[in-house]
Length: 251
Image 1 (cartoon, rainbow, N blue to C red):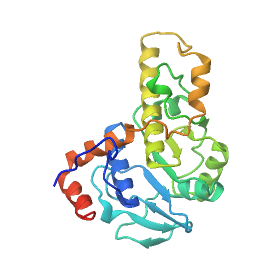
Image 2 (spheres, rainbow, N blue to C red):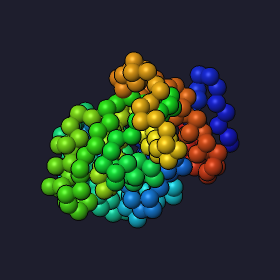
Image 3 (spheres, helix red, strand yellow):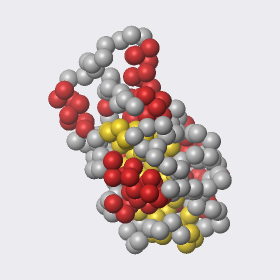
Image 4 (cartoon, rainbow, N blue to C red):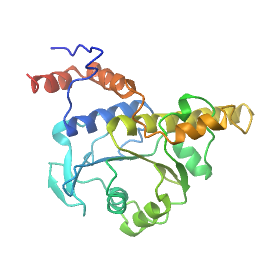
């Protein structure tokens, strides 16, 4: 059984847990792969969150490993421990109950700019996609499991949709899996390409016009139809067993 996309149906119907799995695996390929680090949460709208398990990397956990937790971090459903750094997400979802998806990891190039305490310019079209406001947060005020440090960091993030966390990593927020994936990919591409431009002693200011950057910043990340869906299909091709599992539930 193989999924065959059409113009009207680019991916099979996915459960919330399957979305988290595919989001984690697709982002792993995009540079969000610092070993066991990182967490993804999805707000279920009933006072609970789904999140990835601790002790499994983003490339290996499956839908049956996804956890359901309370807003206090209590494990409600699942067989794995809750990630140690989940207080950052708990603080975010408490402060901004409208947030649906949140991604935190130590991406390869985004982390470098956080270490530099500098926001990189978006030098090219792909680096500017996804929308949202990017801020720099001098976040490392305590251990990753410190609720106090997490609350302070989220307070500094404010209403922004993306953050470089000084000495730590990145935080990306979106209303859907599609939006948060596009934003996370664009952020890492922005960070990588800006580093290359700097290494080549290129211009400090992007060649992109200000009107384009402003328009992209106002995007909610959901407009690039097909971007997320292509990544989903790639992951299903890579793991036929997961594809079979998803398709068998839809028969």
